[in-house]
Structure formats: C-alpha cells, structure tokens
Image (cartoon, rainbow, N blue to C red; front, side, top):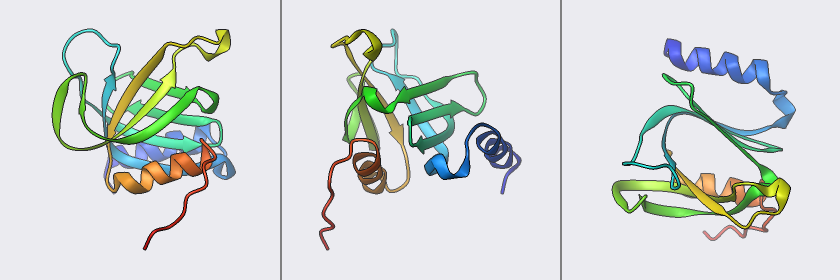
Length: 136
C-alpha cells in the first residue's frame, strides 16, 4: 500500500464511522463538474459512498466534492464529459446543485473507476434505492 493510500484511509477512518461507509475506492480520477468553466480537469483521489451521499477528495489538491444523497438524481455510464471524449469508461452522477431551495439546476460529475458497472449498481441500490436485478 502506498503512503498516499494509507494517508487517505486514515482520513476516511477519522471522518466516517465504519457502519456508515458503503464503498470506498482509491486511485480514482475525477473529471470535475460539468458546470466548471474552462477545459476538462483531472483530479486524483478517493471516492467514498456513504449513507448520506458520496464524497470525492483530491489527493494533491484541496478539491472536495460532497454530494448529499437527496441531491442525487441519476447515475450512469459515460465516455465523455464537458463535451470531451474521455477514451475510457466513466461513472457519471447527475445531482441538484441547491436542493435546500428546491432548485432544478442539475450538474454532473464524472469519475474514472475500476469496474464502473459495480459502482453504478451500488449507488443505485444504496443511494437511489432502486431495486437491482442481477442478470447473469
């Protein structure tokens, strides 16, 4: 385990109870918000899916995306973000930007993760409360 992963695990342990964590992924690439101005950004870090939403924290930057569960509207597979082709599989999440004022403004964030179908399934089951049938 690298020093960075160890440090990220310590951060997760410090900030979340084990029973609240649904899934954690390290070495995740976040492509930022679709509403951000400028070109596509890439942030390396970790992703935590917890009972109250999902969180991405950057490894080498102060970037932190914390999306509450009640804001999340959709999760799906994509291969582009901000009109830029990613040339890789990504998990995209649509969410309300200001749910506290019942805003209808939707933003999108994209992540490169290993096994995107599994991450999508986890978010749909635990955060969107959709029943998922295993198709084997």
